[in-house]
Structure formats: structure tokens, C-alpha cells
Length: 169
Image (cartoon, rainbow, N blue to C red):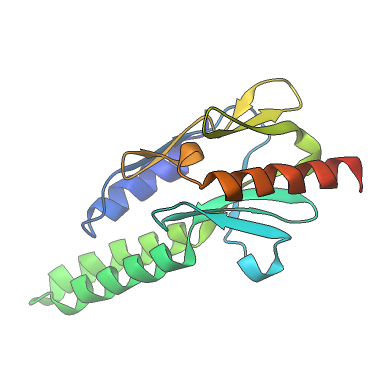
């Protein structure tokens, strides 16, 4: 499981007043990379609560905080730094804020070629790696199951786009 980056985000976001974040990622295919620009995606869908975006490009599927959520966290971080009365407190909060900014500007991604299938079953997106193991299976943000937090319309559109890419049509 590759939970270390998101566990760190959970601890850092807690300092901003956001709820805990957790995600477990199975397999060796998921990578921690820079945040993707949704304008470069073939399709991007965001959870109904607006906090997490799932996108597909020509080569990868990526899971990341939404642009709205990133702006919100950065605003809270700026306020925390500005509201520190003493130099030591400001220095500590600034260091934590810098770490959070760097971490939230990242994504979990998996190459299309490393995915066997993507389906929408029982109100939930399911990703299966080429080794047959589930990917993004236990992903949560603010205690919400991310893979069941997309609208049915968006989730089904995502599955169709994945299959178009996989079949080359």
C-alpha cells in the first residue's frame, strides 16, 4: 500500500482545520506526481461535494484534490500564517504551510496501460490493475468514499472514455 503521501497530507490538512484524509492504493502502478491541469484532460469529473477530481488524459488516470479544494486550503493556510502573533509561531506555521502547499499540488496517477478495466457498479467506480488487483479501492476524503462520490452520469462518462482509450476508438 502506498499511503505515506496522503497520510502526510492528512496530518498537514488537520493543521488547517480540514478533516482527515486517507487513501490506500494497491499495486505497484500508482505514482505520486505533480498536480494535473484539468484543462489538459480528455475528461475530468469532480465529486459531488467538489473536493476531489478524477481525470483521464491520453496516457494516465489521475486522482487529486479539486482546484476549488486547493484554493480553499491555500486560503486557510495563508490566514493561519498571517494570524500568528510571534516570530517563532509564524516560522513554524509557515514551514508547515509550505509543506502542505507542496503536497496538495500533487496527484496519484496510474498509466492507462497499467489498468485492465474501469467499471461503474453499485454506485461506485472500480479500477482494476493489469495484475487483477483493485486500485483506488479504499479512497476517502473527509470521511466520504471517493469512488462513490461522483454522480452516476459523470462516472459512466468516465468509464466510456476509459474504454474508448483502451480500444483505440
